[in-house]
Length: 104
Image 1 (tube, rainbow, N blue to C red):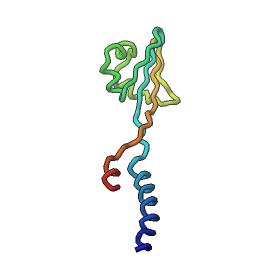
Image 2 (image 1 turned 120 degrees about the vertical axis):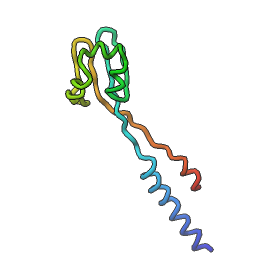
Image 3 (image 1 turned 120 degrees about the horizontal axis):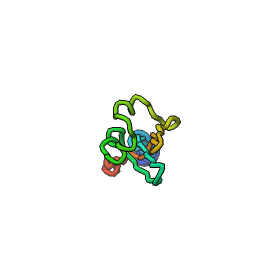
Image 4 (image 1 turned 180 degrees about the vertical axis):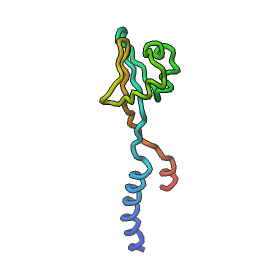
């Protein structure tokens, strides 16, 4: 009986560590950050397509959606015109898995 509980004491922490590493990993999500130069307003979007759905931002960009996509903006290569600066970044999140509680 003691040997069985010894294995449980070793196995459970190792299992939880491996489970956490594989199921609660950080997930990066793309964020498009638009800064309006005149008003210093900031807008955040989950995609370039969502950004072009906002008429305020679309009018300030002054280019078509397909043209914007061809620009290949990144963290180090923002899009800028006389009205706005558009930066691409990432939002770090952690995946939460409720099934971990079921195992305990």
